[in-house]
Length: 377
Image (tube, rainbow, N blue to C red; front, side):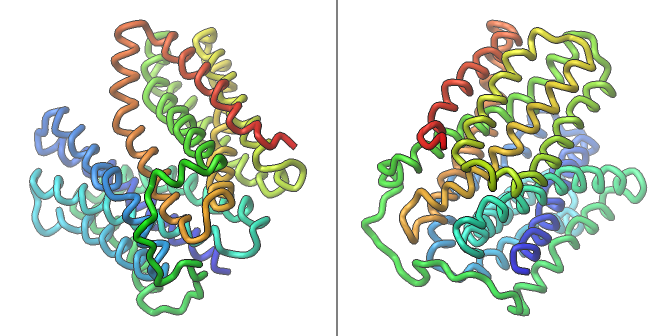
């Protein structure tokens, strides 16, 4: 029951978060913001998570899980509601920062909490369910925002999105949901350092794989429109290709509980990274829409499997009482990649061409997959 409730709460908060990114950017454009300003607004969503994810993870290790998720959900709602009462570009800067901070606090805590529901062998299935929630939110949030802006206007859209976290806030405020208790609840070891987590071989491998996985996601999101345009595809066709990726991530996450009964999580992760690298190696060799759709679908399978496997293995790899901190490190890696990778891909694409970027990432993923071969059976 708890894992389903937390997945539903994640769908509500993440839909609000993703919907707000669309709404904030489009509202800023309506207010005649320059492209640089819009980019700055999007960067503010990840600024505080990049700086304070490890701190939030340590809090998730020591506090009751209810409190950080309650505060995080409330911050998401408050941040989205700000432009309703104080319109203007300055408010959007504050709103983006508050929303990003609130969702980071909720996300890290919910990922830490999911890992303690049931027995360790239940983790792949539990994180697969949570990842399904991510897939639903990725479709629901932007779609809800777009339809609401067209039909109701910006102010009503901000209100609608701000109401999505309200049931989550109410549920945690009522304190009726039974949540797992962190093993280190109420304890603090002042001698623990983040660098110590990298001394654990499995944790180190997972952080490397996280960087590879994040790079894979960012490459597709950033470079697919660029590559599609370069081979003469229309925006509609490019959108369909990217939609095939999203469909694949959703479908494969339905199959994860079946797959983990037939091979280990490490083996699945290795094959997922190998598939992802192979797909990127073939991308520059394909120019037809049908071929790119098939590659995007295969890519979605690879990256869709990787996310829940990484989260499940991370809980197994780190010392007891430091899982939240480890989730915070993983979040820092991801948010840093979301900030740096588009700039890097853009620079490389201009310097050496789009095809070389695909092949460079393909090689990195194939080599990085070796980090998951530690336990191939």
